[in-house]
Length: 471
Image (cartoon, rainbow, N blue to C red; front, side, top):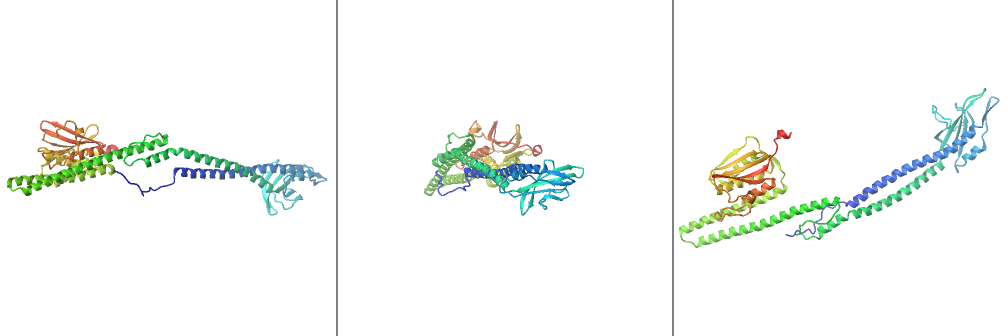
């Protein structure tokens, strides 16, 4: 069997490498953005600290040149203070010496003072304000006078514009971003190379699958890292199940074709003999043979369909909580409808308490019907159907009769397909094969019991706890 895959394209998403590359790029972009913000903030603080020292030095020099002469406050601003402020190139310089009430002793009258109520330490207080249409950085330093004529604080305010500060902050941020961006790019390239190397085992698996013959379902034996070995093991388990299913299906189709051809050939041969026969007795015997073969062919067709459904449901049907007593009752009723009124009567013996199992109701009914059909067709009356719970958490459904039973000693040998009794051509030989497959599907087994004049064959399944105990 060869499966053609030309023209069948899976829904392909983004590759793992591409996804990781996008994730790393986003992470690095966020890192660079955070670095820019942090570096600019650090540069701003560093620039303020450096230039504030200039303002502090100039304010201190001015404060030292405030005197009281004949009851009047005199301010002698030294040239060195302006020289110190001029170290910030291309910046405009402002100053003001004022009383706390706002009276200006010298300098710019309208230069803003700090907000009232703010505590001004002896070392000075730096603040930013708008003046002359632009933002400036100022420092106010108090000078306490304790003269006979004048007592109180005098405020010395010096300021300059902030262009140099901004330039220094941008320079620090730019250098930091350049380093971080270069390192991030190098990390991204190295990470992509590492990912490419790490993904090689997946490429080898892909190539091995694409190059393999469609009929080759043997397991892969390649070495793979721990993260990929689980994928290889899963593929091998899937291929093992697929190989078993394909082989079983091939054998099943071959056996089915052979049995159908055999039945049709025999039916045709008997019909041709009947056409040429004139003896009424021999003609009647041929009619009986034709009828038996027709019944066998009909039974074979029904069981082929039933076997196909059971096989399909073993792979697809979900297991549900079932009461095995109800399943047995439904199976006995359906069997009676198919067998007709002339069938052997089936005696039901059900447990008083629910017998819960996890199973597929359709498959279990088919198995029980085949057990009943086997007992009616090959056993002796009376036929009984029993459902009971057994120790060690097992649930069993038994079909018993008074016949000699199957000519085998081990229940594991039960279930060979098309084991047709040549003396009963109406038997299709698939009934117990269906029972065996249903048992394996439900993690169960087939059991047989023999006693004097008694034979029983049963389906042994794992039982579920009562719902009251599960809660």
